[in-house]
Length: 314
Image 1 (cartoon, rainbow, N blue to C red):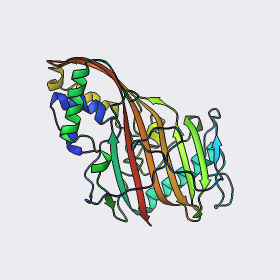
Image 2 (cartoon, rainbow, N blue to C red):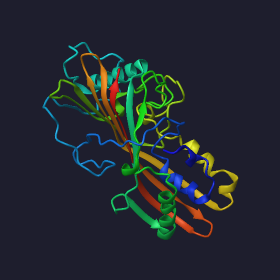
Image 3 (tube, rainbow, N blue to C red):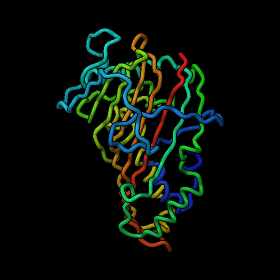
Image 4 (spheres, one colour):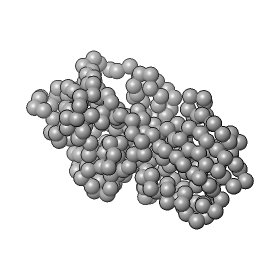
């Protein structure tokens, strides 16, 4: 998401940030290209994804699903099994994901990345209880100022081999995954593809006001922050509590509920190298307050953030 969005002090943009930046972490400049790429999308059946499309049918069988199993913690190494075999159960799937992600952070491969957001306006994704005109104006600001990056305008970023991997999940950390508690996993699947690669899908349980892991921290204060890179609620609060905002806004209250957040990882089991990684974050924003001259507002809005990395070169 655009860095300069955090520098604007207009009231409307600040309120719009509640909707626009809940999905992804603040980041520095990265080299981008004007090229756009279409990448194969994967999602759970019946789940809503940022593009609004349904995923293609799985390539082969060998799928395993694991149900929630108490508070057992996964080890950093998968249980002993041949490298080519599909990991079975939440613990083994999480261990395999962690191993491959941590290896990528160390190896620093070249790769391409694309990220985009969506704020749907249908009745399933937006519920306005008060201030429909106010909400319409605020979301209009999001569109006009380019705070959001829709899929059709998203640019491909090309990261060179040896890059610092600072903005590869998880952000600002030497590890690619800090999650160890398998009770945080809502669903885990693994399958062997026709090309011999293994694809993992991990969906986490719902979590309110998730916090990112601190820079180079060994643990995360939240489950979502241990696998994804959400924006810290404190960053939004600091903006909303600034003097220029408090002069014209009253009683702003909001919560960000991260739900159905899913990571899809395809890797080569012969060398544990990533083929592609996709992360989908869905954020339910419950917000209410009063804006000078615009009136009260109270709504629930779903926001979808999609991040895809591919074309890895080790």
